[in-house]
Image 1: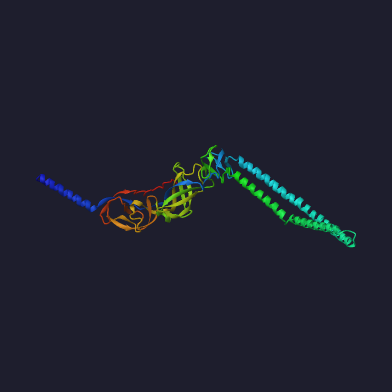
Image 2 (image 1 turned 120 degrees about the vertical axis):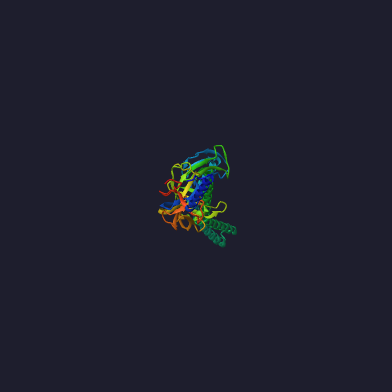
Length: 414
């Protein structure tokens, strides 16, 4: 056989390359695929928030005064009614003592009116009545003697004056006795003086109480911003307290997840300072409006059993468990196209071609979605990272997670 020349060898190589190209085109472009797997799936909403007490209380003074004593420091736990600090109160204590003495005097005068003045006025009426009757008898006897000529007219005039005087004294005694009766003016005045003294005492006690500042609730002292000798003024914060009785998480969730939120939703949280110690929480408040500037909705979660290491204002990550299935058909999120436009679809590998297949989605986990309709277990799907279009001839290259499916763990260890 005659050997091929230089040009013959080149032609043979060109023909071989062309044949190889045609063979590769016939087989299609190699693409990576992912298989639809059956596994458990959790749909969750992730957010970042801060720990808060049920209430944060700022303690201040209602009056301007010098601080004489501060009885707590940061971190102290205090009970409702426990003294926190005292202001200079010498003048207020003196006023309180004066008010107490005035009350004692008012009550004594009231007792004197009831036990002495009322009985004395009643006896004065009896005496006045007797004097009046005597004056009447004397006036009648004198008038008869003057008429018979035994006494001069001057004697009758004197008897008349005595009678008028006795009558006036009787009327005065009766008025005084009426005033001293239980329904009279004097008991009312005595009771009024007692009430005024009691009110003055209450004012003095209130003024003193404003100088002895106590905790309104069971709480933890967060901040101390005052020392003995400082001047307290209205509007200045002296102490900051965090009310005890429960811990909550305040967080902001993207408004696109609003449809998944509902009161009572279980959640897991982890403090950034203690990443290996997650704890349970529960959604109990969803704000009625969305923050238009940030596109978020405020939520609050109760922490029924707060760990001892939690502190107010800690940063925490929260995973709200919106749904869970133990046995679902699952694909990675990267394999689903247009998932939020109402008509999601995938690019499936079928008969050597990339075929557009519409699907219906269910739960959406972190990096994965549930396929409710359109695919079955084992179907191979081309992810969006591959350069393939519907109708392209393709062939399967390396398959992602072919044997065991794939696993998308939650960011919080369960």
